[in-house]
Length: 119
Length: 107
Image 1: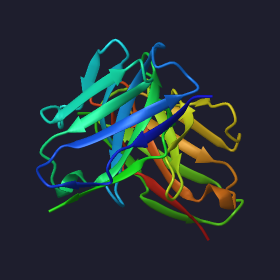
Image 2 (image 1 turned 180 degrees about the vertical axis):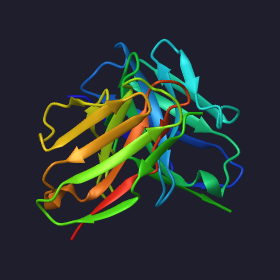
Image 3 (image 1 turned 90 degrees about the vertical axis):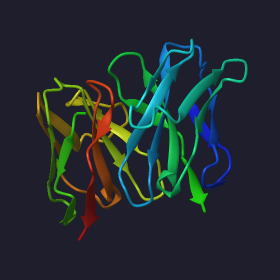
Image 4 (image 1 turned 30 degrees about the horizontal axis):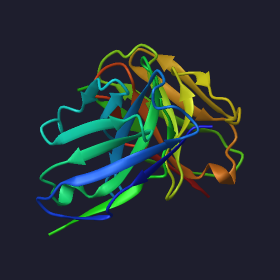
């Protein structure tokens, strides 16, 4: 059974870079799936950030594209997110999730990690 | 971007009653519409895919319907454990977008 777990700093200073990793267990990241990031500001709705295929193919949300970088480490069976020049509006719970190839939903999701941007 | 207009934003329901949530896409998305349940301090959980297709392990009281721009999510007989926020999401085109959510409260 596939499980995903986010990890990284829970506090990032304004203007710095947010860096998170999602570890995948029970499943090979080399499978025909996309590995995505979604975020949720406290008390608000969900925003898709982007997703990456194990080969490195990527789709980003245009609203964040200039600040986002995603990568895959197949040797560690994990993938990562970097968001540069963060501000308070980037404070959110960040989720990683698996998406099958094609127009499929995110399933399952990691438990999420709260990242707070401090001034 | 495709805007997903979800309504209502909040509903308070007695156990055993029916709950209906709607999601309207700003343009046609075929049946690429998914429903998620999010309980407090938990990650979203997939309940319905392709507008009406059930997910293994999800109780049969949860169902979905619709295609094109208008979609409906139904809980046929609400149970106390169903207290949560429910979101729709379109998977038709990038950027993927979510509805604003419907919070279901138990009376």
